[in-house]
Structures are given as C-alpha cells and as structure tokens.
Amino acid sequence: MNNIDRRTLEAILRQDFGCFIQKTFGHLHPGQGYLSNWHLEAIAWRLELVRQGKIKRLIINMPPRSLKSIVASVAFPAFILGHDPRKKVISVSYGDELTVKNANDFRAVVASEWYQKLFPAMRPSRTKNTEAEFTTNAGGFRLATSVGGVLTGRGGNIIIIDDPLKPADALSDPKREAVNRFYSHTLISRLDNKNDGAIVIVMQRLHMDDLVGRLLHENQEEWTVLTLPAIASARESTEIAPGVFYDRAPNEPLHPQRESIETLQRLRVQTGSDTFEAQYQQAPVPPGGAMIKRKWVQRYNTPPARSSEWRVVMSWDTASKDGAANDWSVCTTWLKGVRRECYYLIDVFRERVDYPTLKEKMLALTRKHSPNEVLIEDAGAGTALIQELRRMGKSAIAVKPDKDKITRMSIESTKFESGSVYFPEHASWLAEVEAELFSFPNGRHDDIVDSISQALKKRSTYDLMNAI
Image (cartoon, rainbow, N blue to C red; front, side, top):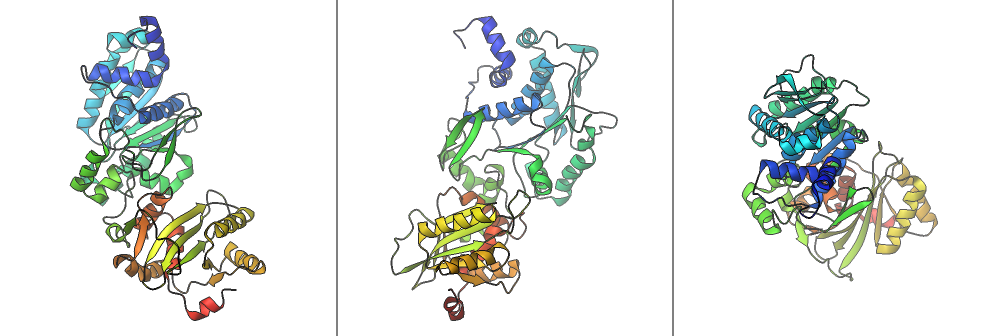
C-alpha cells in the first residue's frame, strides 16, 4: 500500500473490509506489525456478506488471540456505520471490562482523522456519545452491553456477540445457562426486523452446551458456520472470497506466523487436551471423553499390510431417508486381527443420501476394500441392501441389535480401554469420528458410534453361517 496514492488507498479502505481491518489494527496498535492470513480474509468476506444482507445468521468459531474482538466488535461496527450511519448495532460481550475496552477502541477508530476522511457522512451525535452508546447524527448507533445487561426498549439491525462466556465459567451449568437464556429470552427479541436483521456470534468454543453448541443443536440449518481450528485435524478447503478457496493440509497451524505447530503442541500440554480441543480446536467434548476416553485410542501412521493375519470388516448403519433433518448413513471399515484382538479403523463413509445413491456407494466401497465381512443393521434401508447384496451373490451379515445404543457401546468400550482400537494420526474423516465418539452419549448424532460398536462386537458362528 505504500506505493499507491492517497485517494486510491482511501477507495480501497472504503470498499475492502479486509484492508479496513488492517488499518484499524494499525491505528489501535501503532508500531506492531499486522500479520495478514487467509483466515482473516475468510472472516472479512463473511462479515461483509452480513453487512450486505446476504447472511442473516453467522457463527465464527476461532481460537483465542486471533483478532476476533478487533474484527467483530471494533472494525465491523465502524465499517457498518461508515457505509450507513442509520444502522443500529448492538454489541455484546461476557463482561463489563471487555465491553468497555471494545467500545473505547471503536470510539478511537471512528474519531480518527483517516476514518472521517473515508466516511465523511458518519458523524457522532451532539446529544449522545457515551462509553456505552455511540449515536450518529443520522440516528444510528453502536450500543455496547454485557451478558445480562438491560436492553428494554432497545432494538437493532445487527447484533454482534463476541465471546459471551468466560473460559473460567465454562464448567458452570448456571453460568452457561444464563448466557443461553439471555440470548433466547432477551437478545433474539431485540432485532427490529426478524426477517432482515442479522446476528453474528464470534467466540471460542468452551463446552458442548455453550451458546454455539445450544444453537446448533436446536437448529443447525439456520446458521452459516465458519470453524477455524488452531491445528487442522484433516484436509480442509475454506472459501475466503467468492470462488476462491484456501486448502489447508492436515496438522497445519491456523496462523503459523503467530503460533507454530510446536507452540500449539506446547499449549496442548499446558492447557490439557480437553481445554485445547474446545478453545483451540473448536471441538469441545466432555472432560476426557464421555463414555470413550480420548486417551484410550491408539494411533497409527500406516495400517498393517493386508494378509491372512487380518480380516477386512465393513460395518453399515443406514438411514431410511436422505435430507438434512434425517440421520446419516455410515460405514466404518476395519482391519481386524485374526490371532490377536486389535482393530484398525481405515476408512469412514458418512453421508445423507437416497437409497439408489446409498446402493452405489456400498458397491463402490465393497470393490475398493474387498471385505471379508459386511455387517449391515437389519432395519430400514439396511434390510433392502442385505437382500440386494445376497441376490447379487455377495455375502452380507444381517445384524439385529439386541440392546440399546448405550449398552452396546458400553460393552465394546473395554476394547478401547485395553488399547485394542487404533485410529489414524490423520484422515479427512477423523474429526467427525472423534467429535461424535468422544461426546457419546451426549452428542447430537450417534450413527458413527453405532457402526463402530457393530464392527467391534464378536460374531457368533451362527452369524457367520448366515452371511449369505
């Protein structure tokens, strides 16, 4: 930017929210270098879509110290009001100290000479310009409050929620519930127009039942979600601009210039796995895992070579319908030891598909893995698949569960505890598997868990004889 003229620079800052964030950071932290990164581009683009009215509900989950407050609570309201001083923005944080800091940073930005040159129409009201509320001469405002604050009679066009829960309060059921209740009983009603108003939540995950966990459990389809783990657990592709994607490799840090993989691994040790998984990886689980403990799972880099010492087992848990509101169809594929009890998870399929597509996927995976055993729960679509496979001359073991889901996994949990179950260090599907497994039985889905417990269960001679 040093080599372009002033008017061009002002035009860029006025139109490009990502560049505006950089200018805001430089103003608030003079002399401290701004380290640009793809995740900031991804955030800026989505927030700009909110400003334009194209996204109405946005969740951004990201680690601590990733500029979320400067971006969401300072730069974004300033950019909104610069473009339209009539807008009404409500900004909410977990406590008064953070609320006041963000408000003062916002006021410092909009009072700056460079900001006033960018947006000459946006001027403070002469009658109301306090620490809690900045009002424009066009009737718009940025109103700052904390969780539990009084908003009686106040409404807005955009509500920004920035870290509504302190990490120290994450394990307190009453304090988590107070945040969730404040959102549902107070904040949601403060939108002037429920159809056109927008809500943005920017926070680090702290607990399975924090505000984001509660909202996604109740109505995941309503929200656009950008999840930014500190370390990629699988290969990821994130859209950072229309049609432009950043491909992130497994084990790649979110922002290596700020926190290297070595730094993050030290943080994992210092904070503990459960805290790190929540705050840094955005994947909270019950402490240590619920039924299956994280520490029980063994890891492998390369699975054993297939030989007579190993059997390939495919385990299917099928849904009866496709569609976002229905369950998933899942297949886990395993290498199972013949002479010793050990199980290597080598592949996972998990999709919502209709029956014809499900049949195609099953045949494709069967060709890929040439399994010795194909286990299919004998219910819903699974019953039809069993019949079709047998008509085609392929073996299929019809499994009729004789116990409930929790009891079935409880029985197989001993295999995890004894160190007999191996997961890969890296796989594209690994994060989904672990999120569901380590939250069971309190998670939203249990289809992968059902497939796993079905695969680990010992088969009787009767089962094997009837696999045709």
